[in-house]
Image (cartoon, rainbow, N blue to C red; front, side):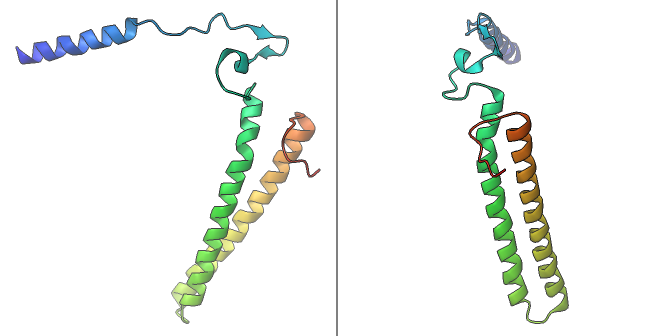
Length: 130
């Protein structure tokens, strides 16, 4: 008896959830450049997927750079703390080497994105070094 009551409560809740009215954006107008999500949804100054993505690039690169620098400092601290122990010294050297490689990859990808976003797709508002 108790199990049937729980099932009926759950089914009633799911039915109410699925049949409740919700906002529909089917009447959203599209302009000459396609659908403008900024006009249909409340995203503030973000008018397209490209502008939203370009706003995320700089914070992501900043966080990644901070993490690479912290990893380098951890490797340097481990190097100083090793005290001549060969295994710890090798681990510290690997950390430092990996952080340098990570920093080079970050720089390369940043400049590739600079070229792709600015030169090929003409995205404005991104830092222009080229």
